[in-house]
Image 1 (cartoon, rainbow over the protein chains, first blue to last red):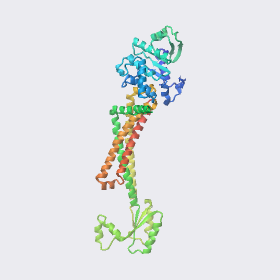
Image 2: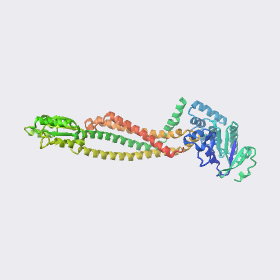
Image 3: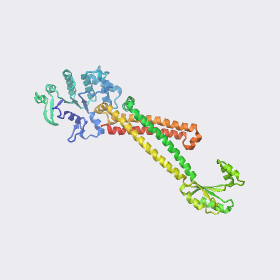
Image 4: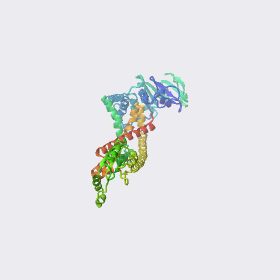
Length: 206
Length: 300
């Protein structure tokens, strides 16, 4: 697990968008799991996105689908060979893994913010991508729920999925003591290995 | 394989049909303008077909040259004239009409029986009816035939000078006006459909963004919008095609004699083909318009 930190406007979200090819770099290269994201044709972008799970601050769940269908959608649109039954079972497994095994039939508006974020995480990892990127995943959540989400992301990281989190939350960054990449004005100014993040007083003043 | 078919049907067609029905209010202007365009296309197409047939009939009639023979014409002269005309490569056929046949024909024309009976003798001359291959060459054949000694010097020949050209001029005008009218209406229908799909894309931009983020291939994101356009086009085409077919059918059934006179060649099968073409045009126009809209308004 790696944190991406920096003041507002430093380029954290931009970097995540470059990784997911929501935007194309004007210069330089972006390589994801052997794919040249910077040079990918529009018709092949979906191929890249299947290798990158994404979690947003505002969850981005489809309101007309229940929790299980939201997760199953990611499975079936990325691989049409997945049958309804297989999608249902794998979606329920993913929901089980994020602690929502009993809420599969709940619509997004029936779930709390934390629960919606868990569904979003289940959707992001159900295809078992090598990389998970999260943009302020705790930004809309209270502290306790935020910690629960971070615990979940740590568990996912422990399963071998690379997790890259853009965040402003100093407490989380300092307490978890993971690798921290600091961006300022679009440049990487610091790369602190896990366990050496210190108090990060500079971030508090940003 | 079954799962693939099921998923493609669900995400491409079922989703599109559901979204189309949900956005019926937004699709209604496109549906009605396209139905109107297609109906008028069918009507203009059928009229054009009838006019083309009419032109063929008129061209056939205008290219017949009647060469009137003197009552005292020498049989050898007549024989030579007939041979000369029949051998000419510009001539398709030569038929002889005797004085008696000419009288019989005249009596079938309104107004002429009285004229025919007013005279004690038969006033109608015998003639060679020369079918010229091209209407443009009738005048040349006329010039060649009228000087022959077997030909009546007072009233040597007759043909419908300029009739064909007049019909062609009218047809050209009608065609230009029809095409211009359809082009304007087509542009309006395409723009209305493009904008209705644009509105659909705008109203579902979050859904589109989510599909793109979870790795949906491009065809799965764009496809439903194109199918929605195809639904609009095919429904408009089906409605307009049925109305076109129905009107033609009613015309054929109600007044077959007069209808075939002002719309020659328009039969039930022609009307059915016209209806099918209108439907196919609607399908193509709807799909094409939405493809245009998707390419312009949907980011990949």
